[in-house]
Amino acid sequence: DSGVTQTPKHLITATGQRVTLRCSPRSGDLSVYWYQQSLDQGLQFLIQYYNGEERAKGNILERFSAQQFPDLHSELNLSSLELGDSALYFCASSPPLRGAYNEQFFGPGTRLTVL
Amino acid sequence: GNSVTQMEGPVTLSEEAFLTINCTYTATGYPSLFWYVQYPGEGLQLLLKATKADDKGSNKGFEATYRKETTSFHLEKGSVQVSDSAVYFCALSVTGYALNFGKGTSLLVTP
Image 1 (tube, rainbow over the protein chains, first blue to last red):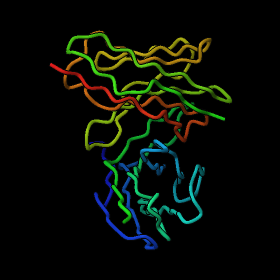
Image 2: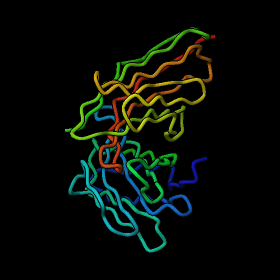
Image 3: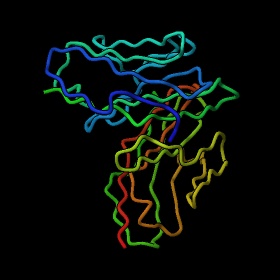
């Protein structure tokens, strides 16, 4: 158990709908990252927040957005869903950076199925 | 840009066989390198890491050496077990933040 929790575990919805994925980081971690894992694209970085502020953006679609709240939990919002958005969405957290490396701890993921 | 290329799977080995999973990278800057493992139905776990050239990361019998001259970080284990069956991801981080992952290599170890 990494200490990172994600809800829900599974989500089934229809095209055009909007969903919210939730992540609670490990105690003391200030950074939250979102990744998408799909069969064709592999594991891709979407976005990072640090202590409530957006820190870095990866291959995140405009239909997707995220935020980190004062209690440091984060939500990933996916709207106007398409079939191709079906994937595993992982959240990871890490402690404040020390030096060039900081380990990321991954949650169990949310499996999104768009029908 | 930054990218990681790792060998295609699946890799099927008998128990106690020697394992090598190749990983090469391209990076603008000086990356840290990682191997993550994903067991069925679970999230990713850090297996080992190396933050500078010639560093050797090791954990649970797995090893990988950061080779700057060949831009490689191959994963090895001398004797695999059935419990090592999983998907292995090579990854890099240049900024110290976001990870760039390879496509993953599925390993199946048979008794």
